Image (tube, rainbow, N blue to C red):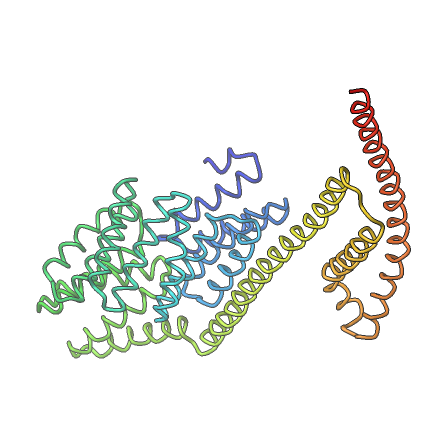
Length: 438
């Protein structure tokens, strides 16, 4: 309804992105359709920020559908745009999403690098919702690294942030992660309690992938406790929810569990049925072609990050050079001003002018040489002969200018010297005249 009422194109793009977020955990196909509409509109009206936001949502949809290479490609394209326009909110989302992909594919150290950068940006822009999401993901990375104390700390922080803003989505998600952590550490009763607590929040927020994951976690725990019938019920609910809403990873996990369940029951027809589904889901997630595409994108992104770091280093060096050039220029001006101020009240000899004139000429020439050297190298293709020729040409222009300036300064100084001597002579005559009078 709000989308139909919205007339401003830029606001419509952002509203489409917000709607995408609402459907991420329930309808990935709808997310894709809305995000593509936002991307098309953004490009048509030249709305760069909207383009980046829409690409990020397209990545969300690809991730939910299990197409990780296209997901990564969308996030990286969005990140480049956000970096260019200094959109920190967008950068945080991109970095967090890339960190999630890295975590899902077992590259935990790199996942932490991306997620900690995202956390820093979320704190910088004071976005508690984004911060809660990132803290949850960091908790999951530490869980995968089997650093359970750190996993609990970050997940608890995520819950606290979500509770402050009353986000059912993130309260339910953080409770689910707590369930996984306690399950992995053998605290089965506590884990089941966390899973049960998470369900109402996830249902309220319609986070069906989270619900599927929670019920799968409960199924595994109940199976450990020997409650096979209850385990089957939760696993079947997990499977149906994932299949109905198109969540490939959750379909794979639930169908794998059901395959084993039916095999143990000697129900081979059902076991083969779910085994085929699990294999199809696995191929969709981790086919060799997709793995190669993902590795290629990883390599390209590493190269891009190295180029960014190198550009930043060059920029810092250029800034230092500019400061030094400025200091030299100020020094030359200060020297000239000091010379004229000092010489205003004292007699300056011609040789003194000639000496400092040559010194000034050398300083100016060297300053010009330093300043234009990079351009000379580029223009002459680093040819010593051409560089020498151009420097000689510059010197040829400076020498006559120096002679004229020296002549002008000498004339000024000579006239000034005459005035100083005349004033001094008058004072002497007046003093002697006063003594004779006495």
